[in-house]
Length: 195
Ligand code: 3AM
Image (cartoon, rainbow, N blue to C red; front, side, top):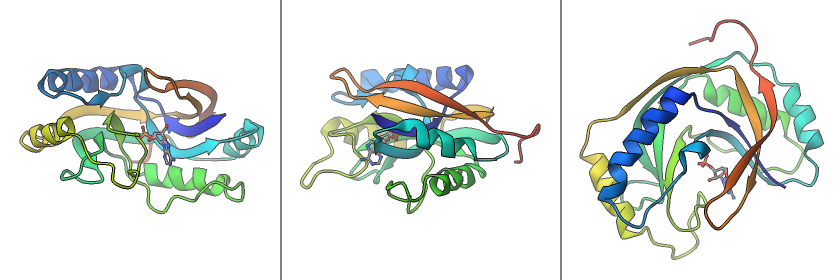
């Protein structure tokens, strides 16, 4: 099965993200926006895993404090001139640390180690949706329009939350967009988030 590790988003933030997307949607065409129910913050993409048991067992060993996140701003990967992924940004100083622990816990299992962690929440994708384009894959006109709209407006604020858990997700690719299912929950310990 195709797996990834991610944080879930609180309802209030999900609604603000969704309202922001709803304002943009009618103003651009040909952009594949992510379904609200699929909003998440990926810590690590694993890809095909034959048996998730070892992954689960290793992720259970992680000890980490709850993570405070301030969702604000929006931008594009790889950059606004050739946009392929449209994302909401966040200030979350502890998130890279948690992503590193996930990476370390799973090292030696054959997953590619993350070179650099770029925290983001994907709002829309173009083309294959892969982080890197296929050779010659161009960013569509709708995405260029979107980049102009976003670059010309103030940075949106989506609110703050504290993540007290993270999840192992399964991603099933389907014609209408990927279907994500939570397989396992992992608690982030301690009582107070470190900011
Ligand atoms: O959190 P987002 O939505 O940015 O882009 C995919 C998604 O990230 C990413 O894993 C998350 C869950 O599908 N993803 C998909 N294929 C990938 C790949 N080959 C990938 N990340 C890295 N390499």
